[in-house]
Length: 387
Image 1 (cartoon, rainbow, N blue to C red):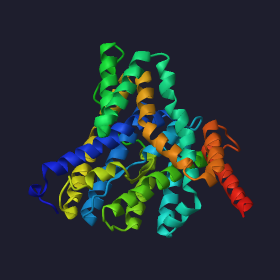
Image 2 (cartoon, helix red, strand yellow; image 1 turned 30 degrees about the horizontal axis):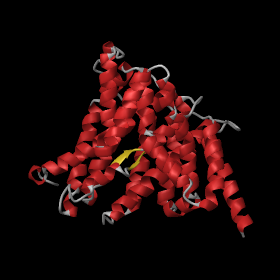
Image 3 (cartoon, rainbow, N blue to C red; image 1 turned 45 degrees about the vertical axis):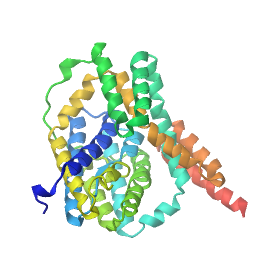
Image 4 (cartoon, rainbow, N blue to C red; image 1 turned 135 degrees about the vertical axis):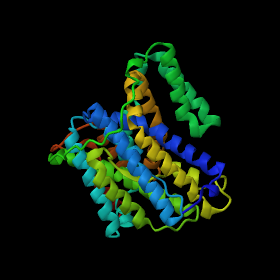
């Protein structure tokens, strides 16, 4: 066990930065996702409590166990996908969360992790995510119609700060939006009250179509955009920690905590790299101390889960829509670029993107699933034609 004297200011700074980048860019999206399924105020608080608790325990435990800077986080792209779904009850969504987590555990336990990644062409997985995120991101400009100045200020701050302070652009954009909303009298201060953290159980539903509509895009988002890049980043910094215990422990925790709102936790990707560089510690074997502190910060946020929700309910809807939409710009851009990366798969990627963005429901199953199915059909047809 590390001693207090082992920690330095750089470890603490990296932990805080990783937390702010992860939390600041996704908390509002998680809030929107919970509301999309009709979650009550207590259930929304339960989502934030459960997610922070699970991420804190796993980040702390795995970092100490393997002496590696392992960061476990919620699946932000998955949350964005969930926020774009409509007409699904919370009970069925919970069953979808559990199905996605069970599938992730099986994929790792049976050694299918790398094989399954190869079965789903990366451009099609990216196109599926982009199709859903396009609708989500476009809400920024819908909000501009009713609160033009607010949204324009947030956009300006976001793009200007990305030039010099890219790690904090989301947070600075939030601060600017909050400041304008306070000045313009758009905040309902009466809602800013302390709410105790809660864990509220939601029994899983049985609607197969809704379960598949949630589970398939959530599973693919977690696999393709979190666990695979998360392991790649660990390897790129020279850490050879085995993938199996990291993936399986996060999947098992997701399965157990899903009824409380932990829809999917997995390896962090981009934000995890903040705790792995030489600026954290010159000695690579000591950089895990940053994620140990990060785990403690997560646990503190679990104790204050209701405060976050109270803040969101007090803010105007347009600020929430703009913040959530702008927060996915980077993910959307990355997935669009990945979708068109290979000329041979562009037609299949286009079909996947358009079908996923259509919002159609067929046989009770949502558009993200059918977008991937249709895209794979076109992809393999083109392969046969090329031969």
